Amino acid sequence: MPERRSRTPRPTKRYPWLRPAGTGRANSTPRPAPAPPGPSRGESRPDSSADAAPATDERSVVDAAVYRDGRRVGTPDTLAATYRRLREAPGAMAWIGLYRPSEAELLSLAQEFDLHKLAIEDALEAHQRPKLERYGDTLFVVLRAARYLDAAEEVDFGELHVFVGPDFVITVRHGAAPDLSAVRGRMETTPELLALGPEAVLYAILDAVVDGYAPVVAGVQNDIDEIETEVFRGDPEVSRRIYELSREMVEFQRATRPLVGMLHGLMAGFDKYGTDDELQRYLRDVADHVTHTSERVDGFRSALSDILAVNATLVTQQQNAEMRALAEAGFEQNEEVKKISAWAAILFAPTLVGTIYGMNFTHMPELDWVLGYPFAIVLMAVVCVSLYLVFKRRGWL
Image (cartoon, rainbow, N blue to C red; front, side, top):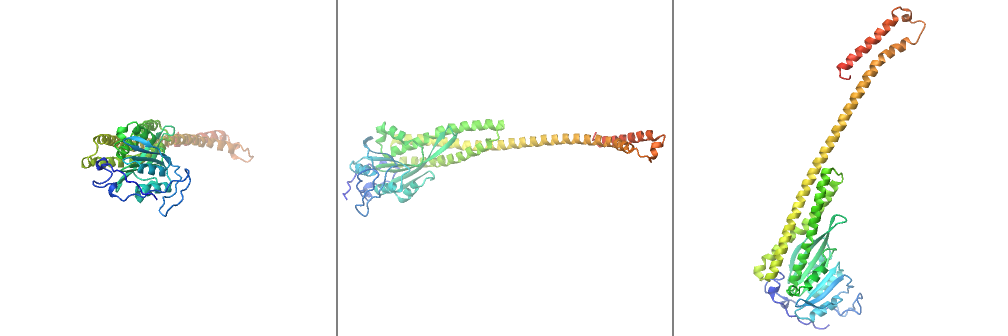
């Protein structure tokens, strides 16, 4: 295996938050050179030695480039070619973009750039919390990007892992957001910013992630306005929408709140490590935007909680009104039933008497009685009047 060529290290102050003062790649154990690439992309490499790099298909490499003085000097088509080109260009920087890479690809990067195994394990698995950790002279950053989907009216979250070292930047995306091709294009059109090194790339990525929060905030604000209208309109589906949006705001908080502390931690080292003044201004601007976004998200959660409480109150009031209306309807129906029952009882008395005397049996004493008919009429009248007075006193009539 050919001996690896040494690289000219950049001044330590160019990487104030990447490693402690006094450390650098010159003092670290040199990385072993990877096995030579195979004859074509997608083929496995033969093991030329026991410590050969693992075979990779490199289908998840979105873009790989080598930069010197802020300008692209190479666009290798494989990871192995990127390693070789970087070793051949002292003072250069590699920027490798990956989308859901395989374990073999990450192990290849770990072997080449001395990446810590814990960081590799995190990069393999999504659903990591936003964080910033230093492993020797390499910084590992986890970011949660977000984008607003207008058609579905929901927030889609993506995860981005960034490895930043003295002469390399590796991005590992686990979602559609953010669009790092736009970040790369922006940096390549401003070579004076890209010439500041990997820390400038980290700033650009942070700035892109934070700028991506603005459309999400605007979309959520519009959703909350619509929800408020639906609440007072009595839409029965609004509770579900409030709950779903509240869950998205919980995820949004998990994405933005740790980022505030991460950026403040970077800013705390400005004076200690002599960070470039231009980058200080850029990072302060990003921190201001993150703080503003985090406060807006906190406000959204509070507003949704209040809206949910108001909606519950309105639903309860509506249910009470419906129950009261049902009770009133039942009371009115009961009053009608009592009136009908009372009149039916009153009319039942003369009907009973008339039915008895209408049987026309031969041996009925009252049939031959002169006062029989008046007696029957008076009897029916007395019974009807008595029943009427009874029902009237009880309020049935």
